[in-house]
Image (cartoon, rainbow, N blue to C red; front, side, top):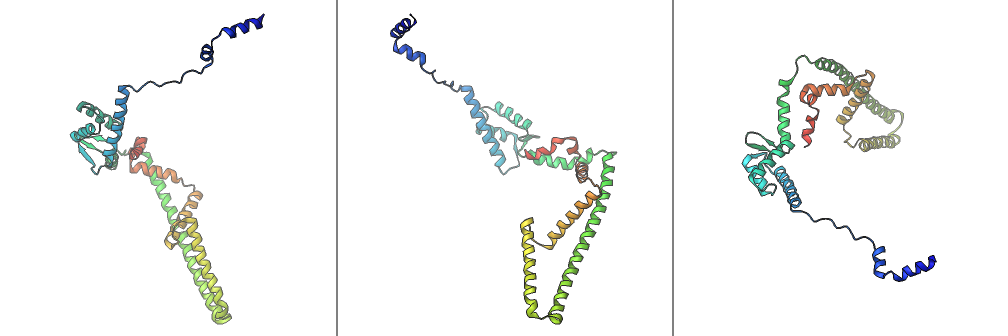
Length: 260
């Protein structure tokens, strides 16, 4: 009975109905871009072109009216009122600085000048960190003097070693042995010095000069002395940076203005 019923259903079903039943759904079509969205995209492109034009220009500041004209010419604003709103938005975002009918195109430079001039007026008289910095400065000076003294001792020891080597070669050449024996020894000794210099250049990526060697030796000795005397170099640098420019201590995000 069930088989008879199923065969009758298959016979009465039309082919197009079966295709409609088993056909995949139609592809999804995204709605078209509306005029308001198109105007917004065009405005964003104009804003980016305006920012690039202002940043890449040779001038540090322009007039406010000239800025509004540039906004309209770049397509970032359609009317003068839209240009004024865009200028205020760019000022709030830190892209430029509006001050006394002028538009400063590099606000980070203005902030740098203010940070250099204002700290003396904002500095607190009875700041306990000043006393801590003074104590750390005295301790650092003592460590630097000791490190410099140790470096000088090492350099004088090197001079004594070179002088002793020359005296030994002189003695072996003219008294103990002969030049025929000492010539290859002197050659390989000189070649070993060149090998050491080249190895120094490969390791440090700097020219193997006596001045550079002395500076690196001084930094190494100072680092070891700081660890020995438990001197907190990070704390010292933090206090030195704060006392030099208190704005960084009060406004932690102030240093980020330079990367805008």
